[in-house]
Amino acid sequence: MSRPADTRDRIIRAVLRIIGEHGVAGVTNRRIAKEAGVSLGSVTYHFATQHDLLRESLRSFVAEETRRFTELAAQYRADDVGLAEAGVLVGQVAARTSFDSEHIASFELYIQAGRDPQLRAAADECFAAYDRLAASILSALGVPDAERAASAAVALVTGIQLRRLATGSAADDLVDALLMLVGGPQRPE
Amino acid sequence: MSRPADTRDRIIRAVLRIIGEHGVAGVTNRRIAKEAGVSLGSVTYHFATQHDLLRESLRSFVAEETRRFTELAAQYRADDVGLAEAGVLVGQVAARTSFDSEHIASFELYIQAGRDPQLRAAADECFAAYDRLAASILSALGVPDAERAASAAVALVTGIQLRRLATGSAADDLVDALLMLVGGPQRPE
Image (cartoon, rainbow over all chains, first blue to last red; front, side, top):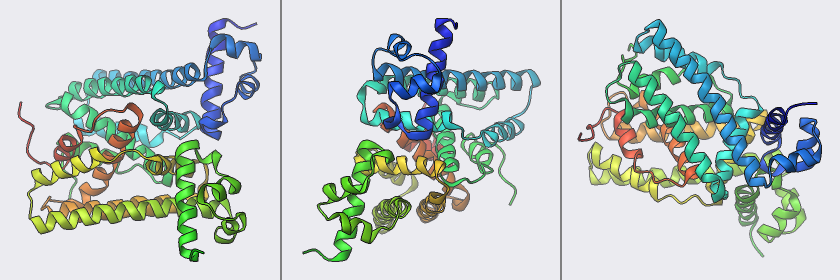
């Protein structure tokens, strides 16, 4: 017997895995129930519509990512690291991120929001959360005009991560790109 | 009666539309034949495998995008515009880009390359083409260290376009972000 919150979470994790592996079109209640190990009735009890399911899955993924990066940011502050070191750390973390099915799913959900206006508000919330996180990290690092640079930094990381996913390339240019954006030290010639 | 090259192109356009609307999982030979208005035999004649079909569709999309932006770059050079004006122009063009099914399809194909290693080389070629284009535009605009900034500019535009697609937001921050990256004029406080 699992608590309702556990069941809900297992359903969401299952949805993210299914989207990551098969795309949004692969999400059916039957497949979710099987993948999550819950009854078909549980799926429809927790999520009345497909929109609810996709929206909550995207929100859940971003909430977890934000929590992970917020912890990381707190660590920077505690360690009182400088901009260049922080850039290197961020780059290392991003480069280590392996693209599991949940990461692939988040990209799929953004694209699905392009087709389905009912998902756009959730996508907007997610990007806004990344913006706040980036602004807080950049500001703690003493980057001038951190608010202005925040959404550009989010776009830069998003774009580089999509390229990494698509090409299997390393992310060794991420740190350099971030430093270029925030006016950090130039790469030696 | 259409020439083989026309048929091939119609098939590719149909594949991009299908992916844009239904995702990669929605691509079947039967649906392509119907959408392109060609025989089922034509589809298998031109593209032996699903990999060929997806790879050539991605290449074709990027080749067309590159052509469009190269023309744009040539125009900048002819008009001898400055960095700020060029940034504004690029931003306006990007902001005007409506996300039709072919644009959505290109994002889907990048994600599919994350699942399917056989697509990665094509994805890599596509990003390299964007890099060369960005380097050529930035260099013509007199941006110092254009090569270094090129792939970061590509990532920035990719990330901002994905956010626009997902949230339906305007791209009014694109110009500002690009100028920040290449060290252009600061936004007035």
